[in-house]
Image (cartoon, rainbow, N blue to C red):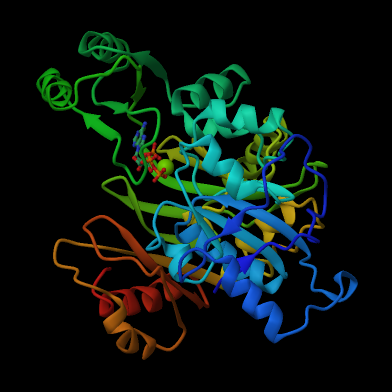
Length: 430
Ligand SMILES: Nc1ncnc2c1ncn2[C@@H]1O[C@H](COP(=O)(O)OP(=O)(O)OP(=O)(O)O)[C@@H](O)[C@H]1O
Ligand SMILES: [Mg+2]
């Protein structure tokens, strides 16, 4: 597919301050050439501007992973022109046919070129230099969420500091830059200590549970601290992990989804249950906290607040993600409005959809193991499981990589989990 922005097409809302030529969006078949569009124009007389299709909105998304892929599906429903910034034509959203521009999220020029005609700019991931985001805002692009809110998802140390200063419960933490700093923290809070890379890590990759001085020495020998600080935090004696998904518009309208329980192994979420089978007062408290965080940080779009529940019944805020989130995938089938539709509605300041739960649900992530070759070839087997909703992300298999997910609905979350796990096992990536 090739898209060429036409001279008569203007952004549906003005974006002050960027004077670049209209971008050429690169489609599946490589850069669109003027020649091809010219031939198209000859073959079919171009209708006058007033009769030409107008998208309901134009949204630019930085990143082209599975979250962008599923946002693309929602954008199709809403007749939104979504363009994604992809690093490769193999990216998950691109292979699903999302209009894209090749470029790097570290390049301001690439981001600007991709976002040139967009009403709003939003995110599939937060790995974008903060300085670029500030500059984009100065230039008049509308970022949803804005840089101050996004910085809390970009930097765990900053998130811990801001949330604790605002009175939200977080695990005891410190900024450390040497093994001695971790030892001092352990003296006060005991072993194990959780040592985290504050920026750029996900799926547990930058999270190390350090049990002793020996382990600490090994960790710092393997990954010497850079000039940047690490986050040391107290190991939480975990009863459960949960996530609260909430959508918020720039005008401050919010909509909360039923809480989700997430089940991790080695720092990566294996499956999740919706609604979280946890005591109602805990879930209500978590919802209230998420709501005041959303307002307090001026979130726009989807916000996922990851929380820990410890064995004494105390809640702690773990991480914030200001975008659709893995813990919200069950909303596609289980809720009236999926998190991907909701994210688009929220970033565009449109009315939010109902988040009513249709049924108890469970989602199992399909994660590449050492022997996973590919999951797509096994799909027909999994589709034999009645009630299994399989979503594949179009990615090559690699150990630890999220390749897709399966959601099932059921009379209870356990029921649903049984169905989803049966299908995941047949896909060879349970
Ligand atoms: N302080 C802690 N105490 C106990 N377990 C923890 C602690 N911090 C993190 N963990 C465990 O490690 C997991 C990953 O941690 P965290 O969410 O900080 O990292 P991440 O790799 O950024 O995750 P994500 O993939 O959600 O972005 C948590 O879900 C939890 O299971
Ligand atoms: Mg996390």
